[in-house]
Length: 61
Image (tube, rainbow, N blue to C red; front, side, top):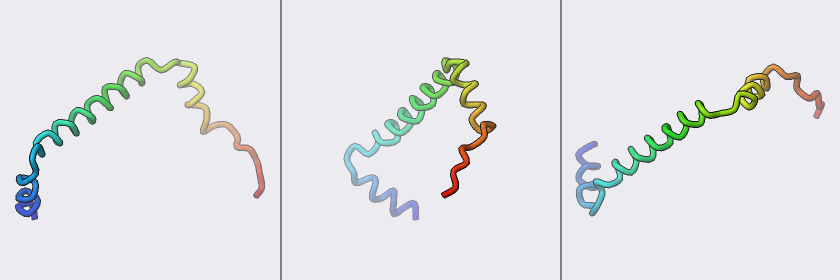
Protein backbone atom coordinates (compact mmCIF):
# COMPACT_ATOMS: atom_id res chain seq x y z
CA UNK A 1 0.00 0.00 0.00
CA UNK A 2 2.78 2.41 0.89
CA UNK A 3 4.53 1.91 -2.44
CA UNK A 4 1.41 3.16 -4.26
CA UNK A 5 1.24 6.30 -2.12
CA UNK A 6 4.99 6.84 -2.38
CA UNK A 7 4.85 6.54 -6.17
CA UNK A 8 2.14 9.19 -6.42
CA UNK A 9 3.86 11.51 -3.97
CA UNK A 10 7.14 11.41 -5.90
CA UNK A 11 5.39 12.82 -8.95
CA UNK A 12 4.18 15.95 -7.11
CA UNK A 13 6.56 18.88 -7.46
CA UNK A 14 7.51 20.46 -4.13
CA UNK A 15 5.90 17.74 -2.00
CA UNK A 16 8.89 17.64 0.36
CA UNK A 17 7.84 20.97 1.91
CA UNK A 18 4.54 19.62 3.33
CA UNK A 19 6.08 17.56 6.19
CA UNK A 20 8.20 20.56 7.18
CA UNK A 21 5.16 22.85 7.22
CA UNK A 22 3.19 20.27 9.26
CA UNK A 23 5.99 19.99 11.81
CA UNK A 24 6.23 23.78 12.12
CA UNK A 25 2.47 24.15 12.64
CA UNK A 26 2.53 21.39 15.28
CA UNK A 27 5.54 22.90 17.07
CA UNK A 28 4.22 26.48 17.00
CA UNK A 29 0.79 25.39 18.30
CA UNK A 30 2.26 23.61 21.30
CA UNK A 31 4.72 26.40 22.06
CA UNK A 32 1.81 28.88 22.12
CA UNK A 33 -0.25 26.49 24.25
CA UNK A 34 2.66 26.03 26.67
CA UNK A 35 3.12 29.81 26.88
CA UNK A 36 -0.62 30.35 27.51
CA UNK A 37 -0.71 27.78 30.32
CA UNK A 38 2.11 29.49 32.21
CA UNK A 39 0.85 33.03 31.66
CA UNK A 40 -2.86 32.47 32.29
CA UNK A 41 -4.27 34.55 35.13
CA UNK A 42 -4.84 32.82 38.45
CA UNK A 43 -8.36 34.27 38.67
CA UNK A 44 -9.28 32.82 35.28
CA UNK A 45 -7.90 29.40 36.20
CA UNK A 46 -9.76 29.41 39.53
CA UNK A 47 -13.01 30.26 37.71
CA UNK A 48 -12.46 27.41 35.24
CA UNK A 49 -11.71 24.99 38.10
CA UNK A 50 -15.01 25.75 39.81
CA UNK A 51 -17.30 25.46 36.77
CA UNK A 52 -17.93 21.68 37.14
CA UNK A 53 -18.81 22.13 40.82
CA UNK A 54 -21.37 24.87 40.35
CA UNK A 55 -25.03 23.84 40.44
CA UNK A 56 -26.64 23.84 37.02
CA UNK A 57 -29.58 26.00 36.16
CA UNK A 58 -32.67 23.84 36.62
CA UNK A 59 -34.63 24.31 33.45
CA UNK A 60 -37.15 21.64 32.61
CA UNK A 61 -37.62 21.40 28.89
